[in-house]
Length: 348
Image (cartoon, rainbow, N blue to C red):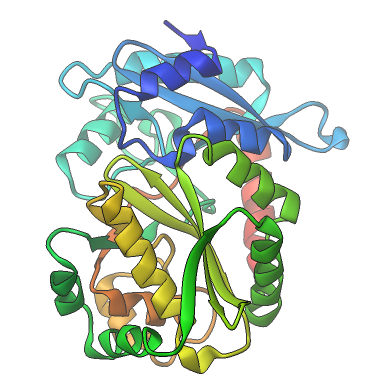
């Protein structure tokens, strides 16, 4: 088996309910409305969704290719990574990809991570040659996160949190806040706009969030939670649920009534909803890509990028985890080097 249809990919993913939400056909359909073209490749043991983005017209039909939080391994013992990558590279060349970016859904320093990278790096090849794979010059998804265990009782969860976070959760429960599930993406988009303006980061359009919600809602893989005070929305999130993992991909909050701690109640409610749906872990998604010692030494002073987010998320008692990060496989090395140079220059 090589390239397959979206429906065939959906059927294959049933074998791995813990595969990332970013590897689902629903995610591919979402990205298809916003400049990407999904393709699905699989053999009997390994598969993945590859997203292709056509570059501007002046780029003469070249594309970039991206595997978000993949590939997916269906049979660890017999995993045919070599066959999978062979098919991926053939497709990427057909699509005139300048390079392939891969962000595996594997934690560092695990047997699974070593098995996957061994499949990317044939015996006898040494980094940075590594069969063309090399560390990516930028990332799409944040490599580091905080993973909160949902094992045990709610009392156990609270015991793992720091004292201030426990206090704020209990305080929020006394502040006349309501928590509800909603289908109203206008509320969410409005709060996202307010959040993006306040915290100075880019956000997606309302159409993007609506399409995302519409794609995952029928399968029960997304819930929109809203915290309100006297009917006015203060905080909201899109909670994604798949297999054992719940993920906090998108969240927003108002500038008003922050003393009522709506964000703490929102996270607490998401944890409870995730556990009710059979999840054993809650992925808080993005934090600065630093080791834990650096995070703890600097989080009170650092104000830029994801540091304020880390200050909030660290209180929920989770473990700092890092994925394998980002790997690039250039097909047209001069153009790849040009793009890498431009990206470094934009960063300043």
